[in-house]
Length: 387
Ligand SMILES: *Cc1c(COP(=O)(O)O)cnc(C)c1O
Image (cartoon, rainbow, N blue to C red):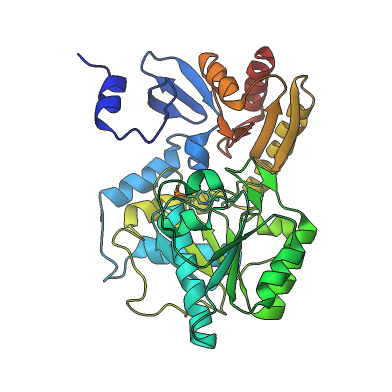
């Protein structure tokens, strides 16, 4: 009999360099492999399982919806979709939401929205979008183009037109590009996730906000990774005291089900009209039921706790010999290991029962927001033992 690993290698396209680990179940922060070995999971499916594996209330909400109405097309109204949109708007102060199925799709929607806004007001020739060097916005053609990392820009030429890149922190470059008069939006992550868990400078973000205000350029904040409590606030923007006209969410929103969302302020919430954008699966009732449960759990106490736990974990990591450059916000954390590559360290962690991620040269942690101090301490003990 062939093993699952062999079957996967033979039949699934080899786009992922998987770790030598097959997971079969999980509960809370713990995952279990085929042999029943237990792991502490500080990856949460890359920030997706915001409440950990199979949280009971979440399972109940999703299951109830599953037994009631599995899918309706966007030709009709359905409760989970409408209630989720309302919760998101109430939590964030945004005016309206569009539901997609992934982060890339949410960003794709944001790009279309920004271009349409500018076209309506200024006509053709003002469609450029500025993004940051070292950013990550997804794998579709437009979001790949938006992604400011050359490694992703191989093979797939030609890319789509209308993107310009600036270094994070280089406000002058942003101003010069905007001065040309053909820019409709600036898109960025507030903490560059895949790029190495690098928070932007507050001065730079404030400066970009001002340039956007002065020139009617839309700010798009990609909160696909930072959003939904990951940084200890519902949106990372709250740390910076700014608000973008368009915010995108995905990873942690569904608690383990595929969903993306585009949030828009009043200024552009009616820019996309009937038939101008759409998706078959977006707003699926089961997925929205999961997201509704996630949002219901994320009250102020929950977010405060997540923020505190993030600070605790960052502090403790910084005290460990052999660890340097601890960075991040809330429970989105990166660090370097002195004499080891991040991927070697992650591989070794798996042997010791600890699941972590990499982000370039950094080890990256995105634990479930429900992780306890006790579980954090256990994980820290394993990390220490590895150094
Ligand atoms: C993961 C990620 C994306 C892409 O999301 P997918 O669901 O994989 O399409 C986009 N932007 C950021 C900041 C991300 O972290």
